Image (cartoon, rainbow, N blue to C red; front, side, top):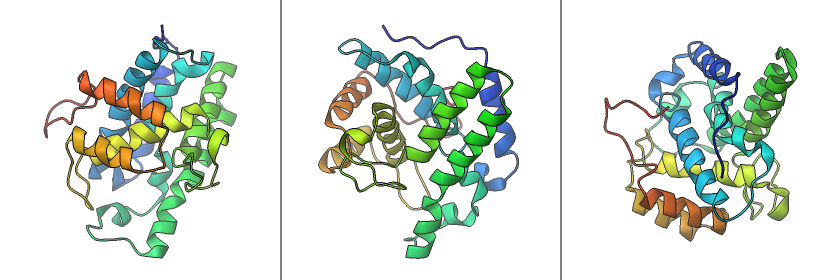
Length: 220
């Protein structure tokens, strides 16, 4: 049975995210207040359900924590990009896509500065997620355009929970969809692992991933 580990570096991870967020006004837009915590909790629920039917690698206990920093590269981009209500230009879209490589660089730096091997191993895992959570099994993702088995399960789950949460919460460029609508959208696209989506649908039906009302405390 998958269980979240009681890892001594959990508190430093959360503290690091908070410190990075304070460096910019972008976190006030809501995407770094709530989104990382919700995706962490949702990935945890998905992995628990997954482990009831099929094995997970030993480091899967760390996977949910990586969602706390999967979008950390966005902190190095202009806040205005995420406030824009209309469609992005090609140049703006290309700039936003660099958040993956920027985030991987940030996590790699934190791995180099880690005080012990366990923390360094976590930041290397976070580097994979920050850099690869927009990769797709059909090869249409970024930044590397990985396809098929080259996209590890970690990134397939990360992409699914990231997109689901984004679709079910308000952003400047789209209104929030219901969980059922979000899953329907995702299931019509070719960019998701069908097994991961099936597990996600079950955990959402069980109550995970429900949008919270404004002012309601976010799940940590």
